[in-house]
Amino acid sequence: MKKLEALEQEFGFEYPELYKELYQNNMLNLGEYSSDWLQLTYPKLKANPPLLLYGQDFEVTPIEEIQSIIEEIRDPDDYREINPDYLFVPFGQTGGGDYYCFWYHFPEEIEAAEPLIVLLPHDDVELEILAKNLEDFIFAELCKSVCDVYEEGLIMDGSFKENIDNMLRTHLPYLSEEKQRIVSELYQREWFTHTYKVNYGKGEDSYQGLITREDLEELLEKEIGFLYRNERFNYERDTDSPPLQLQKIEGMLWLYFSPIPEDSSPVYELLKQLNWRKDKNIMDKLAYQRKLSQYTPHSDWATRQKEILEAFLPRLQKLKEFQGFQLVFKDDSTGEIVDLTSLYK
Image 1 (cartoon, helix red, strand yellow):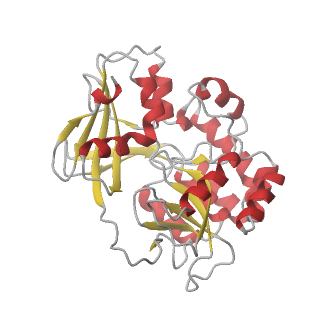
Image 2: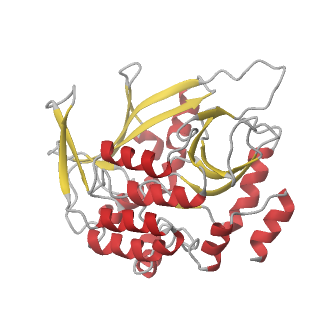
Image 3: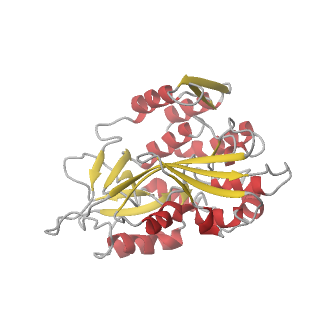
């Protein structure tokens, strides 16, 4: 507990009791990340999954990194220009580089007994409120993990049922009895494929899981809904200088391999770590996609390319070694198709 206490004293806050309990029970330890994490570390975690190991887009922030992150985002010269009245303490992050944070000293109009759980983006001036406390956040992420499941995601490694049963077992102690009941019942549902109409391609698309997107949102609103859930707040400090002009980058990243690698190729293990969605409609090559939506103050394309790929850089560096590697970005606003492969040559 000394590491947590040192952070509390340094920045003048108190962690929620639930977070301290997770720390004491080794639920925040995913091992040291490396290119061999999937082969060397993951097998040791699989039987007793730590916090949201199979969450859709969640990685625990190591305790050792929290101080430097807080100092970075509170730096007056940081590009985000965060209001110094607010205190954000990260405990997780997305694959795209956004932080899941405890929000302390939030505006008075928001009534909450504990620090709010928010998503602090690296490329926008507004945060998103996700839950009014850590327990509600964990509950929501457990439910989300079985909706719209990526077949190439870590949760599908080996037995999906075994993975979610293990995660359920290690996470139930941190939920109320009612939330335990709901998640347990959800995880007992039958696997299904949900097909819906779209205005592109063949006119329909599908996803798989144990609950539909619509039913998931209805469930979360009923069980953990509150006035400010999913609301967005500007986190910038007041300043006399003109606001930073941000430009939106929105489109799709595509990763291709042609010819398609053999089933035994290690490329598939690396793709699980990347956690992008496989496009099964493309048959002549191996194709994975990742929806991208972020803001940037930069107008020059070279800098924007680096921003687009920054969060995925370590994993893509490994994948580039395989035959037929191609990386493409399709810009939604202009329709432009940009080949990014050369950045990795």
